[in-house]
Image 1 (cartoon, rainbow, N blue to C red):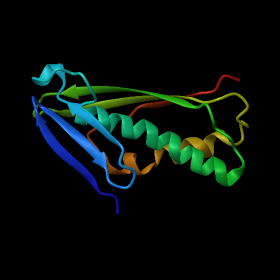
Image 2: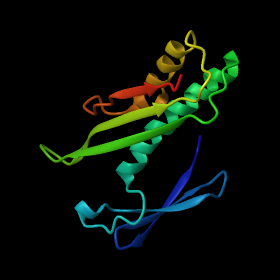
Image 3: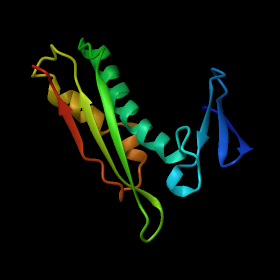
Image 4: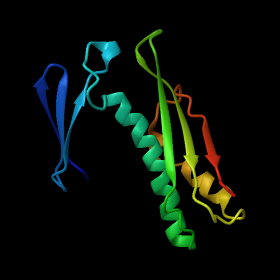
Length: 136
């Protein structure tokens, strides 16, 4: 169990605090929905969670199978839809892998990324096209 506290600070901003670590950061409503867009919005956090979960699950797999993915990066592009309701419509994920990943290990790494806990938790209406790029 993980507890995260949220406090509404006004002006469409919240402060989130991770109880175990004490880490804290603000959220802000996006500019296109009455906010200032000065920090991650709640839906930005969902998109960010997807990319970081994919990399984390690949790293877990890698640690168990002697595959070092240090230096891997992810970029997510979140697209909102408004019809019939405002929600995330699409999160495009591009994962750039470091050099030296054995081609035989790549399919397994990609499989675990595409089955990460955040992917399994998202509304099935959210499109999640994902691309894996290898420099070699």
